[in-house]
Image (tube, rainbow, N blue to C red):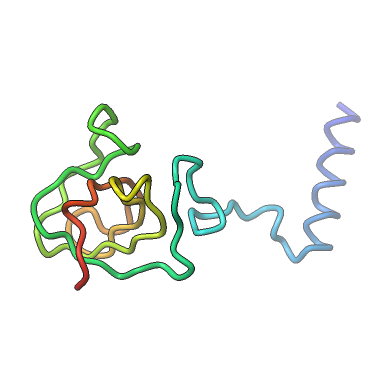
Length: 110
């Protein structure tokens, strides 16, 4: 039981030193791109979905669908895999806020 209290005290002290950052979980961002990415934008690109397509958990049809992105939905692309699959964040529509992979054929400049 003493060890648990010491660990908790050490964590609290550390969080005070770094402004509470230890207690805040990081969100997905360019700093935490998937290892599947083979090419990365220097700045995320604001794109548009050009046809109805699945948002997937990975770069391929074998990965689970997270929902359908409809034509006209906004998508911010952070990186891609072999210019074939785009990874990013949905910024409009029913799946707004979700991160995932989209077949690059369905992602275009808005």
